[in-house]
Image 1 (cartoon, rainbow, N blue to C red):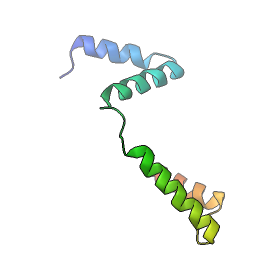
Image 2 (image 1 turned 90 degrees about the vertical axis):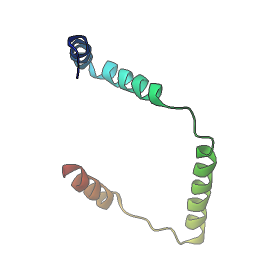
Image 3 (image 1 turned 180 degrees about the vertical axis):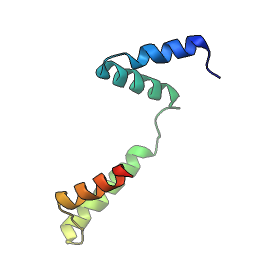
Image 4 (image 1 turned 60 degrees about the vertical axis):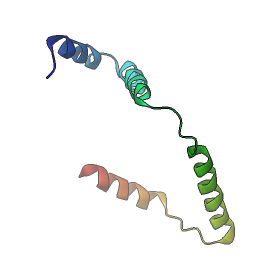
Length: 78
């Protein structure tokens, strides 16, 4: 259960300008991280190389922006 002090902190945080709230959110999320995933960079490089090869091979499937946008907007409205 939140104490009165907790509620005051939340109220004050929500009263901050948007850019300050965003900075606070980033700092709070970073404080939860256990650190960098040592395999993440390697995995991303592998994924990028795979996608580049698909483009070069002509096997990549492309989608126009309007279709992607409509799909995302539909997902966010739910």
